Length: 271
Ligand code: DGL
Image 1 (tube, rainbow, N blue to C red):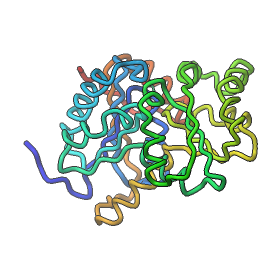
Image 2: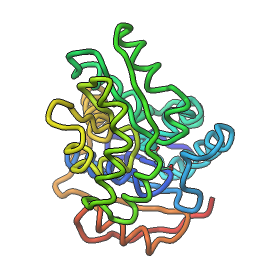
Image 3: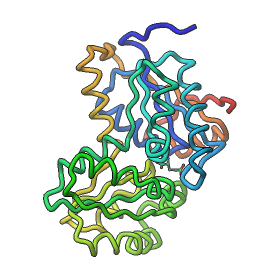
Image 4: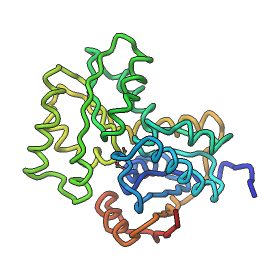
């Protein structure tokens, strides 16, 4: 049965796996009174190497899993889904508001750049979709966008190789062509990349402003809740409700690594 959401209803967040925890973390920081509901599709990750047809089917199924819990808003933490299937999520969740990381990151990059040369890094699917470049040039037609996929960053983050020699070398290889274009702003267009932020930041150098789409989407969610008077009122920060489609134990281990806190129960759901 579909009930009208209230301000105390949860906010649903989904990602292809653990990477979206960067969005969960940013949301907890900015909106500590909100009940957060997180679904990570750990059975079918990665999405970034799959076809558009498959990504769109997964996006609809993931949205339906969150809808079972009557959320008041849906946040697409996965850049790949934001790039290729945001319309599917909007249609499935209608009339609920839906926010994607991509629009939030693109908008912030346009506000921050001074020389109008923006770099984008993301999965193969996100970069091939050209969705970031489209969003940026729509908002600011005279801005130039330089993009490159960084597929090895996802396994490096998942292996916890956050600040070592191999990660530094790979970051150097990936970022060199963008830096050669004189970018002054770099968008971390994949959920996992904020986890490698220290290395990425050092490689890019002090002249490049790093945009974390996770922080950008959390700021948008906060503004949207305030404008619609839908902010939750609670005295204690609630424990997030976590769901995954496979390997809850592995998720718990990565949760500790990414979030630096103890682990709430993780529910296994079927996809
Ligand atoms: N969550 C994906 C993204 O932000 C990265 C991992 C994947 O390929 O599924 O694009």
